Image (cartoon, rainbow, N blue to C red; front, side, top):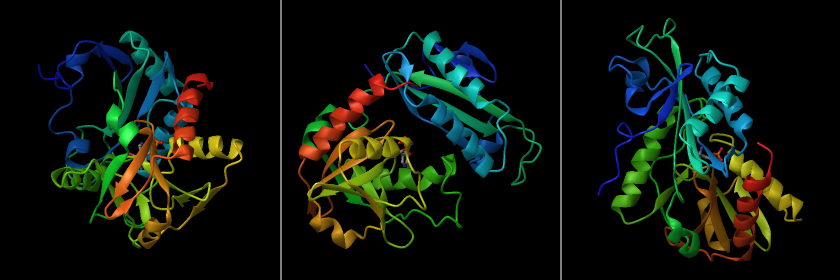
Length: 293
Ligand code: PMP
């Protein structure tokens, strides 16, 4: 049996202030966001009925919209409440939660000042983002020819739908070439991140991770850095060049969907699914189930 499509499921979606039956949460084809990518979104996970780092995600959603020049007509507290209500309405305890805000149908053309801003929240059960076996074997990453844009080329600190165009292209190319995902370099040629997750490397017991100056400074990234430092592990944020990848022993990705997923290879370079990666995978898994929302 094939999985149901995302528009044809039982359950409820929060749309502009109320919970509606899943199949009724629709938009018109002449929606500004569909044509011009005027949408921002979030992705967070619930563990045992509690959404991890919920308020930080809601705050980032509001900020992402501001960076695209629009204001979500709901407060952070109201967005938090909408996420919790959606989870509860669907009777889910462990789930992925997806809020999205977008410009509506009042205007066509590039200008959008008069569009109404919409907000929806959906949630669904979602297992390991890369599959359970990736957690043991480590991911195989291709190196994408698509580069993360400079901060003056796109609003790179926003979790904006439009920024995912190159991620999907990179991901599809990687899949066609037999890889799980792709490493993306930035506009300078420095190591940036994967298509939907941040990246870390291990050398001599220290963590190295690129400075997030043109890509998302992920909430999982920040959480893992804090967990590492609390365990006395030094974390170095700096520019990392692809030539250095041969010097690293371990590598892993972080993201709300990806959690902490080990990487076994990137192009010609090989990494161990080693002790430090395993320590942080376990620490993160425990933390998201314990930490206050
Ligand atoms: N980079 C990209 C491109 C992403 O899509 C994500 C997932 N939101 C991340 C990094 C990690 O962000 P977070 O840890 O806040 O989920």
